[in-house]
Image 1: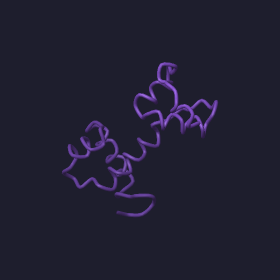
Image 2 (image 1 turned 180 degrees about the vertical axis):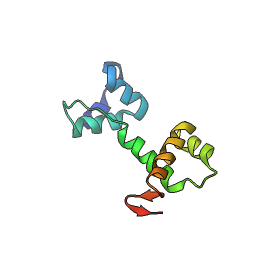
Image 3 (image 1 turned 135 degrees about the horizontal axis):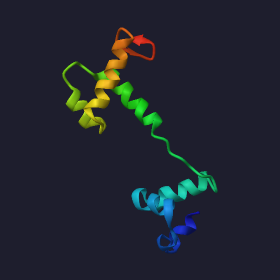
Image 4 (image 1 turned 90 degrees about the horizontal axis):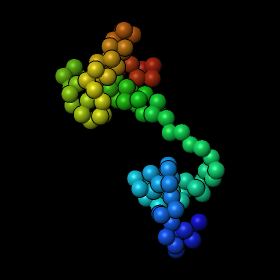
Length: 99
């Protein structure tokens, strides 16, 4: 699909493919076309939310809520909810191991 780089294609793009090309570049779009032709993709944020909660559980020290919120681009309320759920379980745990 390298032939796409030999012609102007950006004016042919619309919708999601235009967003991808604009945000990530034509090379990424071409790679997606190559790897996932004609497949509708939905990129869920559920794993990202779970990763943020895991990070909070691992690095919360009792005094760094604002720092974590800034770093993870989430609200302080999100941090409080994540730490309150692990307190209910009795201790700070990560994948079944005490931290």
